[in-house]
Image (cartoon, rainbow, N blue to C red; front, side, top):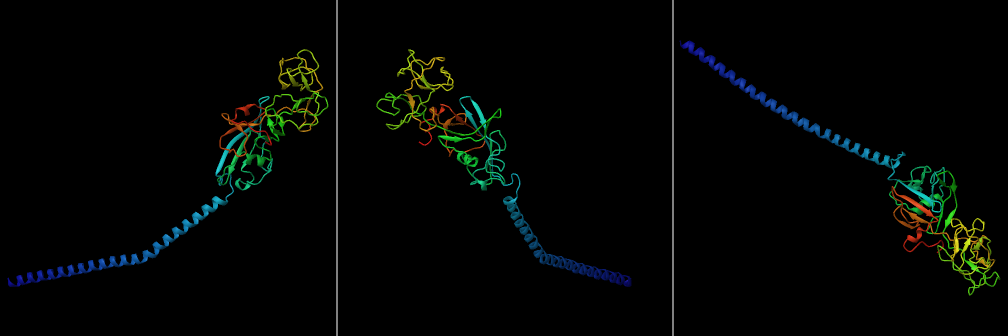
Length: 349
């Protein structure tokens, strides 16, 4: 009996000691695992720092290279629109008010294929073009600039190589819809003075020889004693079939030389009592004129050119800015200048 208890006690002691060893081993194992995780963590921490620095450095390098490449591309790539900051379209059309005929701009202004007279602004344009150019005969102006800029009428006409100011505008090669072209320079001017040479000596005497005259602009009289000229187209409508003109009779310029008054072609020089269409015209050799431009014939007044955007008329001005989507008319041979405040001065004034 005693031996059995001793045996049980011995077994119990053995189990207790075994349990303690297992517990100690588990504790040691836990400590070893904890130490191992801590060591791994320390090792990972030591190794991750240089690794993360390399990643950050790589990202910075990529970003710098990317930005450099982007800006280099923007500044240097030659493509259709990669560097164009202003890309506008507008129209300038000429109008002859006498026949209400429109003329469009010639093609290829501001290109190597057409008129490109002034290269001052070339740095603003895309390769091969002025910043202001035409590509066809639609009168459309292309404004394309690689830099912020403001362009005006003076700039465009400089590129085209044509005169443009309050009194004069040139228009080499403009086209009418049926294909006819027109070239030249339109300048406003007063009519040349028609003078009745009372003494018949071909010399101007301001005390006796004046004739009031119809003119869009103020007529400039010559100095006393100036030599007068004759023009066989200067005729008058005689009220009483007299061959001597009097101040109450209409003086006209018989443009076609048929000696019959036609209001559509024969401008009135001096208004009188009778201006009936079809009236016979008479001559008086003392009706003369002063030939300011020396071309041998009397010249009627030329009204100032007018610029219109469809709502407002104004005098031509080199400093008027060009803007996107705007359509302009340059109107010749029109009385619209009278609607402009202050009028438009003639060329040279």
